[in-house]
Length: 102
Image (cartoon, rainbow, N blue to C red; front, top):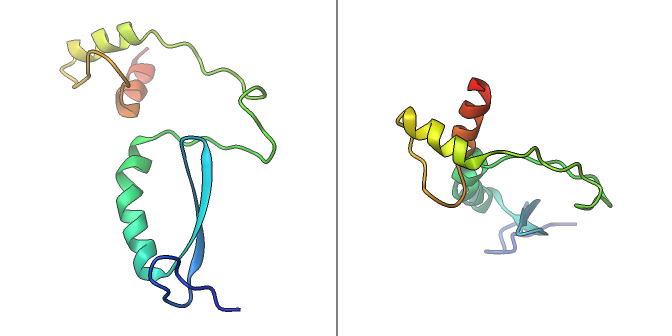
């Protein structure tokens, strides 16, 4: 059986699985489109936090994330000259630095 690229129909494609907003997707991509795909997602993967799920798991079975005082994190980051927004998500790197320091 020959697997073809879902984008351009090229042969020798491989299945790539990815998730977004709680939905898992699969797409068959040849080498060129796999390279483009990986390059496009690289900055988001690097900045994101990896989570592992086993089949059949749900949010109800996962342990809750540790409570973080985001106001304290923002204040700590600003004191050290780190870029942090007034609202919204705090980067994984700033959180790692905060946790290492406290």
